[in-house]
Length: 420
Image 1 (tube, one colour):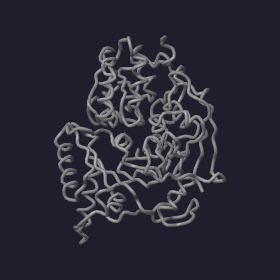
Image 2: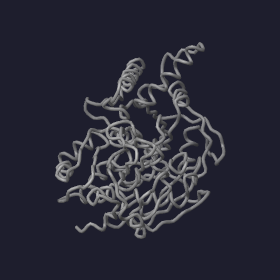
Image 3: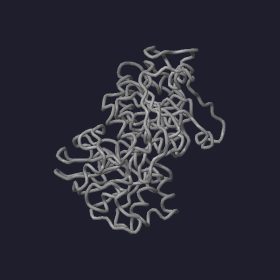
Image 4: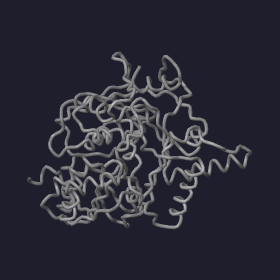
């Protein structure tokens, strides 16, 4: 069995499962945020109107609540959603509650990593499609809709059809100023936006092991952009050291069967850019050299981790930007670390705006939306029509290093073309 199959087998009390089997699996952790949480509350209200009153959750200690999408709240509706989430947390006695303005908070998928909330081998679900991010830690991590998450919160279990697994072998090491974002954009280009529909995307090989954990998070984060059910990486020494014991990692069998296998030499990967309007619409950055931009954005669960900021700062140090550059650390922990290490000074000296942790601009909600006709290059994960603002705007996706280089020149630029 593959690692995804083994996790689902263990969670459903079976010795063995196969792709296509339908299992009722125990869920170890569940996450709601300030968009999904109020949606779940509405489901509970509908159930109560039908005579089923939700008195308690399956285990409040296994529930995580995070304010991240519309914080600080840009309008009354967003503020009301925060109030609804707070009421939900208090009603059911949820202790793991990350609130903006009260210390550590930020983008949910980076919080689960930084706070070690989800462990290798666990089944984890959340009210966000990019919950797949946490699969980089060796968990079976899946995004779900409000109704499914409500069911999990009530019963601690959920049905899964066991997915087939696609294996992506990454060998070698990335060259200077080439990042995991470039790797996943290349993979998406190769397999397409529906190339992994309801499959597990498993990443393995020396190339993965050579990556920092935060880079691995980028791979699993964007697996959903190929339609994957989950993205996953088996734990190695870096993961075991990160958790420091007390975990029960799961590994696939050596003779596990995969639906497809792809191999990549990381030394051959070039800086990539995904053109509008799909993350799978990738080309090498140099093919778009000279494309003018109005704005550059570094942030989100995909591109606002500390390692992302380090790589952006390496490009920006000693330079000034020619277009608006917004830098949004993914969490308060990332923000503080960037402050203490001097990264924020580099960004400010370059002319960038540094803002508080939020998902706002990534989803076109607030904190920097695009006007009609504006063009942005962004370290985020989606560039659908209207994703970051007006439907008549355009978003190009790239790594934090490529975004930083493009901010310096004012047009899409391969970061290696800026001399050290």
